[in-house]
Image 1 (cartoon, rainbow, N blue to C red):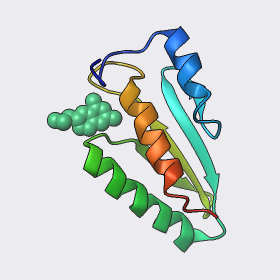
Image 2: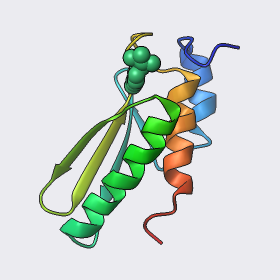
Image 3: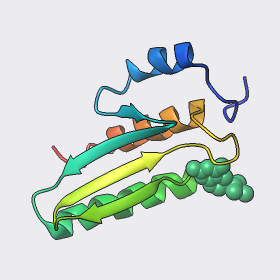
Image 4: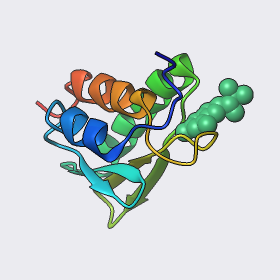
Length: 99
Ligand code: H2B
């Protein structure tokens, strides 16, 4: 199975069960984080950047309201969600950055 193949709605529903911190918004996968402070939010963003670069799969990242981070992933080349987005989500969760 090609990781960059577009998933069906049924496949997305199944994948979502493995990433309860994430929700589907349109054709993207989103996680919202409230960090304790700005440096912590930025530290998280840096950790996500390293994971994303290692996968060659790059989410949109929004830092706002001094301590909030919104991670938005979709596969641009496929025009929607693929297995790669869920792999990225799991790797970000496994960082366990906010204990
Ligand atoms: N990130 C995301 N989110 N979607 C892509 O389709 C994508 C990417 N493509 N990172 C990668 C880079 C591609 O441009 C390179 C050439 O592999």
